[in-house]
Length: 393
Image (cartoon, rainbow, N blue to C red):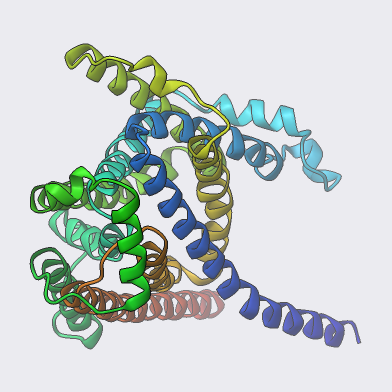
């Protein structure tokens, strides 16, 4: 009877999970799209990328730290015997005692690649291009990570299997799609409601510098996004090392955000000294406006909530599952960016985005098959060990 009830509860949990996991990943994409559009609007309004980095990561650290206190609690022998966790603040103190110079060094490197370079270069690209253009490159991050892992000999290309071939084909198609988006503009898509938005924008405001110097800014933005993608890929490699030396996901995220905020402040101070400009102090003042909304939203939702949802999805479905939803942000950002911010759509951008999505799914299919095969192989190995132990016994 108890076994039957347990089986029913497990079935109900799995059914709920089948609905909750995709819903959670869709929510992550919605939060990402809103963050992109808010950041683009704030940067267009004159906010500096380093200012957004400093304040946004401070808010993110303050958001994730309480989650670390609540969810990452150690058990010692005495508390484990009576089935309860250590008090939250004692547990936090015990975890932070493990933060030595080696851990701090890896967290500093993690913040350099993940915050200062990856996010900082992304904000610079977003300021010179558009949200719809930059989001194409995010679909290439798994592919770039794979290429760097191959160069570092952390992963092999197996052309003798279909999953290996599909990973290689997906990589080539994704890179080709990005080149099409960057180099092939093509004819303008005649969408009346978008043209109306653009006409209103041009009538109500002077042409921005990005329109006057479109070719130059697009080339510079493309270089920024390439640097951002490479930095994100290296960040994932560094994160694997951080997880080994300090296996506390929430605390490592909070410390990384705090370190990234300090690094960004140092970079802003160096930039001010090397290239002084008038009114730099006013850039750091926060008022009750869009800039404050962008800082708080990106820190709380794009870092805090997204981190929890993605960590849960990876734990339940593996690392390939969350990137499968990246194409949703590509479609949504393109539509909203064109409709609300008046960005023109061109055939080359649409075709290139389609190639990027096709390459992403081909790569993820191959990667998923390889992970499933590796998992099945480990299971068979464990089963053989059990049989061998039974034979010895």
